[in-house]
Amino acid sequence: MYDIVIKNGILFDSEQGNFHAGDLCVQNGKIVMPQGEREEAKTIIDASGKYVLPGFIDEHLHLDLYGSLIGANGDTVCIPNGITTACDGGTCGASNFPQFYNSNIIRYEANVYSYLNVSTFGNKSLCLHEENHDPNDFRQDLIEKMFRKYSGVLRGLKVRMCKGTLENYGMSALYRAMEISKHLQKKGYHCPLVIHYDDLPDNVTVKDLFQALRKGDIAAHIYQTKGETIFLEDGTIHPAVREARTRGVLMDDCHGRVHWSIPNLKMAVKQNFLPDIVSSDTVRLSEYVRPGFSLLYALSMLSAVGVPLEKILQCVTINPARALGISEMAGILKDGMPADITILDIVDTNMTLYDNYGNDVVGNKLFVPLLTMIGGRVAYRQIYF
Image 1 (cartoon, rainbow, N blue to C red):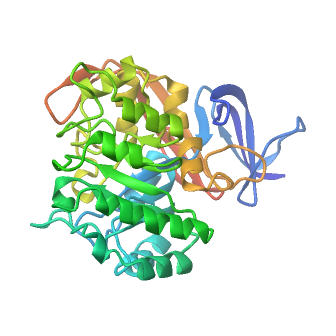
Image 2 (spheres, rainbow, N blue to C red):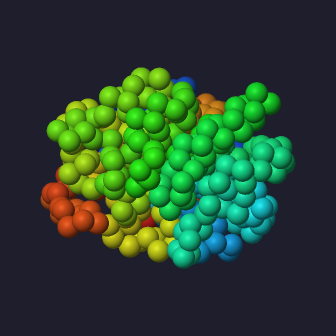
């Protein structure tokens, strides 16, 4: 007898990017794919007409609730939204990551990973001055110590490439961070660079930035609107950005509130320049505040501008799992995987969706969470499901 059987669902194969009807069993916190035998269980969940998915992965948001000005509450933004795995987007540096781990990560029910900010004191957003990205201050010794102690949790090195952090340092900050990343990778750590791409200073160009990135590195906020964007004057994608994708650089929508616009999304979709990853970039101030709102709002927005459903779902399951190096723990429904499962209703809508700049688009799908299961435990369930 199984602990739980989810019957009659529309199961999503995240590796193939397609759907099939079927049942899913849970035993001792693990997924068991039925083999045609009679499926008896202590609990039966009827998912007729509903989508049964690997638990969503929000690959970039900020969750240092008890130690920073920007941290959202990992339990309230993840579980009710079908998110079973999250990765903090580099809120903390080497000096304050232990506090973040002890006060937040180990307390959250969702599985939480993190990037480490290359700046020793982490992200200073909402302060008068942003963190300083003087490469001489990047402490490789302390960063390596953090990766050694928290190797199972730390998933990359975060660099914020924008006017607020770079001052006159230009590309030297990225180059120094890359040296540290390569050093850690040689020691066997999973350590891509994760780039906050925003309003660039005059001494950094989109060409410089994207030509420097390597296979497996992640460019966040790719549809951002400030300064030099990924679009040329005629609206086409910058060749250096396309070349970066060809090399294996991963493109993260990293939604948030101010890092995208509906016109930019539409221009990218028209050219089939779709994201590899969709993340919410939720911070305390945007938690359930429109137009950022949540990861599910980002999914609905991308559907409204023409991104196919299967592609959207891969961007919050298998793709971020691979980017984080955790695809044996998350992002796939298959035998032996942790029973981290999301059940959704995907409903048609004509609701108008908005961006932060006054643009709007008529939506076509809403992603409505019905049930979130973490490690075989039902952690959230909609009242009518």
